[in-house]
Picture 1 (tube, rainbow, N blue to C red):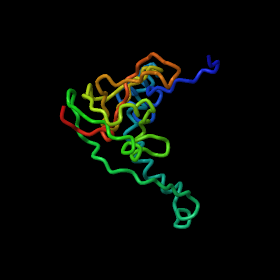
Picture 2: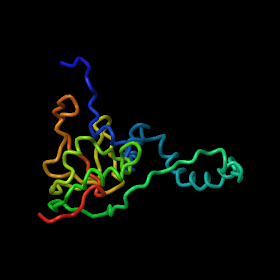
Picture 3: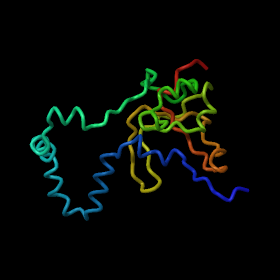
Picture 4: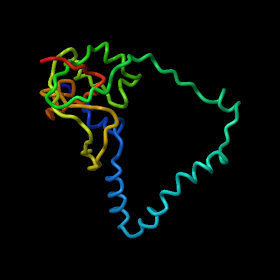
Length: 188
């Protein structure tokens, strides 16, 4: 038996990259953390901060033509497959998971599409037909209870979950997050 444990990197750990905090959650947390009373004067000033910063920032850090051209590194992005991402999938609709080659062509150098990691466990479902179980709009992080809103169309598929074989036989059976760009509509 292997004495070295392989850490489980299930999708819940990737949540920070492909979600954004809920405004309501952040406001409630700030309100509760501040014992409510000292927060009121700060909140009243918030609408004025952003316009003021836009006026002050160019004065503090003016950009000249020579600064932009040579001192900044250039980022080259690989060619990605154009996909029709917004399918507006509804629960009960049938989809086919795109081929592994099609999905890989949408991923960046970190194996992510719009911040969501394409997990190795998901490769087993490439080319298969599935039914949409649920649209994913928001999730709650287990670590701190924070509510996160997903930025890009994402769904869960019926019967599609992590079997744990690639994570030391983990038995959590986590649902896998599927971007609509990795799926295409099909008939049953």
